[in-house]
Length: 348
Image 1 (spheres, rainbow, N blue to C red):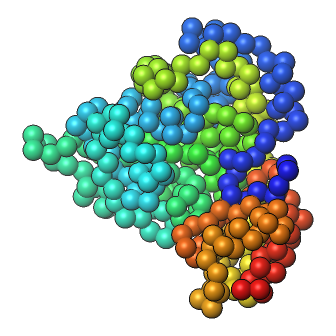
Image 2: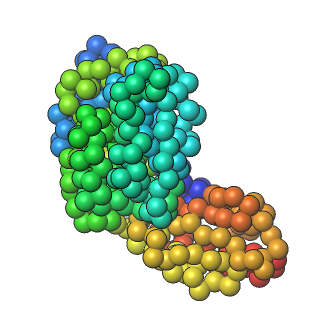
């Protein structure tokens, strides 16, 4: 890359193998179901997460919204975490476009809604209230350090959902990070949910796209929702080819990203002027803050890092940062960030 970019794993460029696959991809009209590379990607993705079928979408936001539209209708309600990505960072799409009411609940330090609170939030059968139809989960949980949620927790929420006849969808944007961090197969995390979306364009390094997976009947309905959202792509095999490489070659190496994130967190813990909870760093995200005696704001620190070291770092409020490791970040890049940050803070 032309910079050391810790802002997100979405900034990652496709690998050389992906570029080669894209250049030679077999294509067709995917709206007609005739793109062989898209069909191959969808089948591979579904197999990876233990589901019957998959649907290639342009983004995780589109995948999550298509899932909501397929599971619930206008006047229905979805229970979800108050700091979840779907609730906070997807432009209110479920309400704006689907007429589905979000019912946000508090989450704990790693992003879990209490099963009892989920059960208490389910509406009774009364024409005065919205109908509870859906529970939304997220794994890894981006709002809480990218923490990987364990299958036991997912099973406990699934038990509540099944008891009341609610559907269960997982925003698995970084699903494979969560699986690799726990040394388990992704299907161990997805077997408890009815549907799951995961991103190809984050840690897996593909340039574009996500895949929504579930039962064949669910995907039939989600395909219509994708069309409504403008997601019917034509010769999309050029993009899907990179996704196939991602699923075949990029999952196991996520452990390298996690190791680099841990290396960064341990370095920050030794750095005067920075505060970090090393124990919360389990995947590829590192959240940290400036110490109280640092006179600079997070924006000022980020600006100086760009100017002096060509290091790009995402801010998280006036005093905080989020650093995300990915394929194009190595141990030396971590050292450059730490050295550059130490220099900036020493001058504050």
